Image 1 (cartoon, helix red, strand yellow):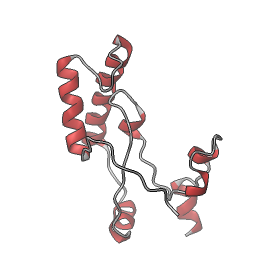
Image 2 (image 1 turned 60 degrees about the vertical axis):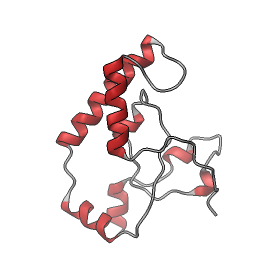
Image 3 (image 1 turned 135 degrees about the vertical axis):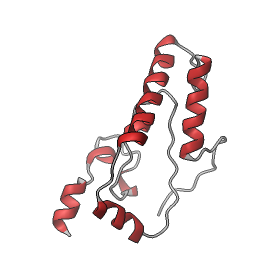
Length: 121
């Protein structure tokens, strides 16, 4: 059973989040109350990475096919503009709610890799 939650505003599509980050970079700011030089630097770096990934990433044809065959899903990603994970880490593995908030590493790394999933198929 998945936990329910009340959405916290604002909610962005990925293009909206990218535009939000672009605006923050132009204004020399970051998301959240901590406007440290450190987090502002990482906001700029994260934005550059997202732009590069969008320009250069190529999905394998079999990945595109697998996504097209998958049932419709709606994902919510909770992140800050300075967080590098939001630029390049989108899990392709199914979630295991039993491991969420486990206080251990298993909730983050216990899923099989894409290659392991493909070999098992």
